[in-house]
Image (cartoon, rainbow, N blue to C red; front, side, top):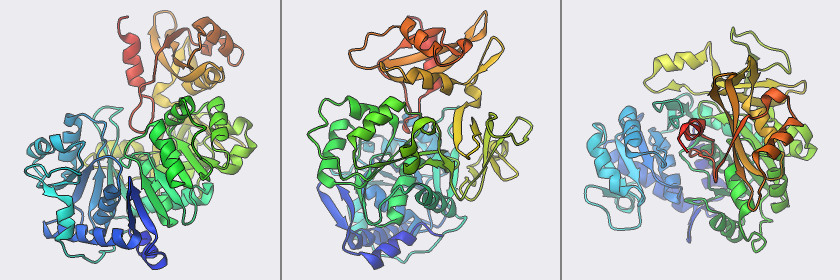
Length: 510
């Protein structure tokens, strides 16, 4: 399997169909492919070899789409860089990956030359913006217009295709090596289990393409043909206008985005009926928020995905599962057909349904390993099984329930408390817009349960009321002993709550 196969298929099936839309710019499949083959030819003429790493530091756009495919067309490795990182973190990723090319847009052109000077391997910087080309960079459009198209090298299988750096939530970022086969398998498995794309449809690509969720969502629609509409940034107004204007059939969002949509002052002025599938994931969603979103998108089916950079999607809560509702809405769905999943105890012994342990997975969807980090790779890949570090359980029907990160489990008074259980209870209060639960040191209990809460607008509920509410749903020792009210939860680029930041916030003096 090769990541360029969908391009050849689209050229045969619908060459004049729009492939990309960005702002007012629309390019057909034929136009896009011509540009891709020329970009690949231009980079090859400048020395790009199969296996070389090409870093991309930019917001979502039509040229990002072209750059990804041009890398694979050339047999190179695309290395999208997290746009929310500091210059020092970006420098680390570029240096560690040994990237020889860097493609940047207007948002990051000002730091690109400094990045090149800091990275010994970086030879070429290509400017992909709309303004004047900065000194020391090549013009993206000129590279395309002056280059000769080249044939697809048809690299695929277990060959490295993508190098995605983790968000650094556990210290130094790690480069996750993703093969052609892994990425395609993940996209196909997600399609098979969740009907998360419409054949020949229109996908609104708003999740950043430097994250696995954004890549898999983009690829799933690409495999089905159709059009990609790119949004460089998410804001409720821009998103709603894009849905109304471009009539997408599929969208992918994270719960923080969904909460922003629900809180937007005006949603009734926009026609959202074109959306047939709404994908969400990255963090838990409250039943209240999900019901509100389902009402906002009346014609849409809903699908939730669970996974991580190292595995892509492992499970999907399908549209049919959402219709059944109830307790299923707390689950991460059923295991995808290409995955094996077990729940194991610390000794590696498989546990029975309902028993909580570590989620481990096996199959062609998992990463090849961490770039330049054999020790860290060996710690998580054991006998071919990827140890996720997530605690969860499978029920009797095969639905996966995520309980917590193992390292985030709270031990209070000798009892284990999983933060997700407490968060679910809190989220059932109508005044809670978002919440996260952590353990804090406590002289009496060892650790105490601490809740960080974002309240809905005009709500004046206090800690005592929330504590009383939670006490009706879960055991007393699980009820938060302390509360902290904030305007927003700190999240990374994938929309996941940064619990280390919450701990720092709780430790900071008032």
